[in-house]
View (spheres, rainbow, N blue to C red):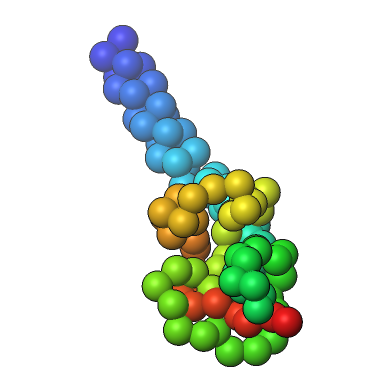
Length: 96
């Protein structure tokens, strides 16, 4: 009887170890979208979906940033956008 209990424990341990290494956790890919902050000649700020060509003029706020898909920087404060940015460059793009 003792040998049967020992064999059962060994089989359970072997099965547990095998199961632990057999399955890989799923990798979650972050889906992201790019945005560009623009300022026109009337000093009006706007966020445009996508990355506009052109250099970022110097400023303390975000210029070009990547956010999680579905995030709209137009609906949030500058501080919220700074915190939510996955990658970012400071400044702004001047538009006519």
